[in-house]
Each structure stands twice: as structure tokens, then as C-alpha cells.
Image (spheres, each protein chain N blue to C red):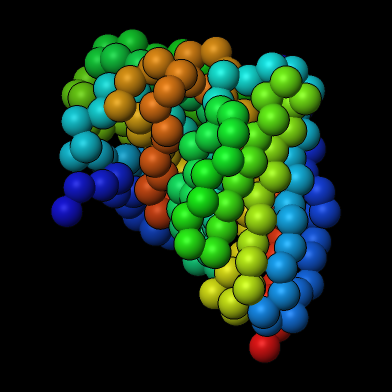
Length: 108
Length: 114
């Protein structure tokens, strides 16, 4: 199966700081999803991005499919951005291969 | 409201007991999925169903069973054969199995062994 590696595994940010999370995948994928898991376990869709760049408020994502990686940018971080960020590669019959996540803590 | 409903939120199982986790969606989605999440880990696929009355094993199907008798429902049974069932279980759905339809997730069920 496809292996997905996320870095850094843990990140502590001062409120207002910017950060970049990275996702590398071992083989070609048909698409890529970014999720945010809040402290209650809810998994929220952030981006569905096979290639190129998308922006949603303070968050943006870039996928370079030819080089098998994706980046998630958080700008002007807020405490509500805390949680775990997952990327997942889409392959086969719309199956998802998840990374282990980036644990982000934003401190006031 | 449209969405995916999982119940119960918390579930306790005794040794040797089967338990069933419920997943219902009113999004009119064809495909549904069950995932397991262990602490500090990503999600792993247990079973998925692309159409009513059909389902396939995922990466960790041993000790689990599913059914898909109705489009909106995809219950997961954790059997006594699953030796380490304590985990967070998440159900998802997508419009169809084509690789350009994002998966949407329910709020999960936390299963613990008494």
C-alpha cells in the first residue's frame, strides 16, 4: 500500500505565528485530502487537492503531484488551530492512506 | 441537517462479547467506510462498501464484520475474535467510489473493554 509520512510530528506555535506542515507519499495518488482533528476527535475536511494551490481563509495547501508531496500553510495561527492535522492520499477505489498526523499546539 | 451520524459516542464491551456500532448517513452517498484510530496514529481502513449489498475488506478486517442492506446504513460489528478492540472508530461516506469525491466523516465512537 501507499506510505504517507508527515512532518514535523509535533509543533508548538506562539499565537500569530505562521507554519508549514509537510506530507510525502511513497507512490502516485489520485488525489489528496487534508483534515483537522479537533480535541473531541471530530475530523474536519480542509482541502481536497490533487495538484496546485488552494486557499481557505488563513489556511492554504499546495500539492506537487509529480514530486509526491503536499504542504499545508497556517498563517497568523490562533488557539483554535490546535489539534492534529492529517493528510491522506486517495488511491484505488477512492481508498485513503493516512499519515500519522502533525500535532499542533498554539499557545496564547 | 445532512450528515453522518454515529452511535453511541461511547461503548463498553465485556470480554467475549460482540458489539455493533451504528453509522447512518442522509447524504444519499453510495460509498461508505469504516476506519479505526489508535492513540497517536492515523486512521486505518477496516471495511468499505461501494454499493448496497456489497462490501470489501480493508487493511485490518480481521475480527470485524459489516453489512450494507440499506444505502443509508453501514453497521460495524466488533466480534470477540478482535483481541484488541479498544480504539476510536470513525465512519465516512462519499458520493461514489470514483476518485474525485472527498470522504466526509462522522463524529466517531470510542470503544473500551471492561
